[in-house]
Amino acid sequence: MKFKKKILCIGAGYVGGPSMAMIAYKCPDYKITVVDINQERIDAWNSSQLPVYEPGLDKIIKMCRGKNLFFSKDIKNQIKENDIIFVSVNTPTKTYGAGADMAADLQYVEKTARQILKYSQSSKIVIEKSTLPVKTALAMEKILSSAKGKIKFEILSNPEFLAEGTAVSDLENPDRVLIGSRETKSGLKARARLIEIYSRWVPLNKIMTSNIWSCELSKLVANAFLAQRVSSINSISALCEKTDADINEVANAVGMDSRIGNKFLNAGIGFGGSCFKKDILNLVYLCNYYNLREVASYWESVVKINQYQQERFIANILHTMFGTLAGKKICILGFAFKANTSDTRESPAIYISQKLLAEHAEINISDPRALNNAEIDLSGVKGKISYIEDPYKAAAGCHALVILTDWDLYRKLDFRKIYISMVKPAFLFDGRNVIDRKKCHSIGFNIYVIGKRALTHF
Ligand code: UDX
Ligand code: ADP
Image (cartoon, rainbow, N blue to C red; front, side):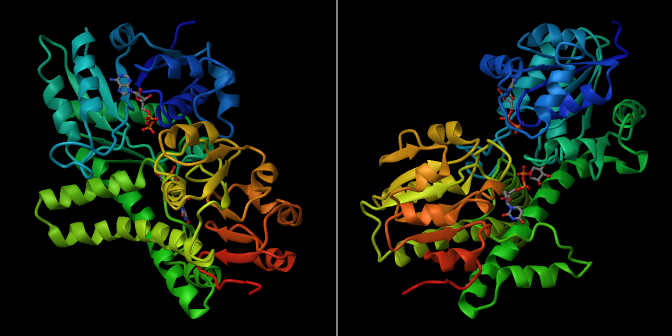
């Protein structure tokens, strides 16, 4: 079959895989190839066991793979063959040198730009999809503009706003698609080519264009605002626990104000995921770089509250369980950073598990999708850890249940059956506000839910 357009994506991760699958699904006459340096990842994308769990994704992959969607390791030839290239490689927080623990580590982006330069034999549009600090496009441009002869590269920014767990519907019905470009003749032409792709399924009034720097910054700011909402409601949850107010009632009342809105007001043990912390730290680094100290410390406080919320949760477990966890068995329900994903990057469960182990508790970890990642995250951590998928088996014989992920399945558990199998007095710490607390209290548990008065039998 002769394809109308050929598109390449470099980086087959949580963003590259699903977003390219959606283009392939919506544009059967386009050929989409996704490449990665990681052979295992590519093999997994080509197998029935995809490397990421994302509801609805396997169906789309099955429909398109081998027809107009391909996963490959042949980076060199794919760069040669495609003239529209998305870059979706990882941009973790730097762990070394200048800007350590704050700035984005751009080594993978830079390496990708150099690969594109090395293997290109014709002009190309290069599209940043990874979240990047403002002005990254400039660095890419500088590297790519050293191309010899007539080869020209146009850099676009097209940040991805999908959230894990809802990636398929977010990609299918995005609130907006943002495309940033240079406002030159060739920049606008490249912009139009990208609009042509998205307009296959996204209404034109949702495709927004801007200059490239606004585009890069908008993605960081969108994530910072979302994380700020989570930290705002979490900070109030601490106050609720002191004042007998109920965080759900407060969130509902506040969210009914149409200027505020009711989404993203669930109090819990704090945000995780690969984006929020990284992007805010990035924003803080940028503000400090431009000597905007007050602005930097304002945003830094969002991350501090997130950490505080986890410390508070752990301190409450320790204090409630008579000041010692040594030798006690604790069942952790949920290790993923949120429901409906296998992803555990920056999951609060990692830190909380480490702290419980440091108190010499034994932990049984249960999660329907994330146990493999949990084992990797905790490898090398000292202490007794068991990984048990069945929540009933994981809870049996434990002194406490600690809910760390809002999986729907935890709302539907038979808590009476669990209670009977546990050591008494049995404690239940709900870090995600998922249980029916009065019902669980009447079963016999001592209940501690974030942002609510404790219900105990003491
Ligand atoms: C986020 C952004 O939502 C997305 O637009 C961007 O592209 C990537 O970063 P993601 O990290 O996948 O997506 O998930 P999100 O749903 O935003 O949740 C992030 C964290 O905040 C999770 O740990 C979640 O549990 C937590 N959260 C979210 C809350 O604690 N309370 C809420 O009300 C909402
Ligand atoms: P994200 O959540 O942003 O998608 P991931 O870490 O899940 O991040 O995915 C990024 C992918 O990019 C990884 O699979 C990694 O192997 C890949 N990658 C990093 N550098 C390169 C490169 N130079 N060429 C090809 N793939 C790369």
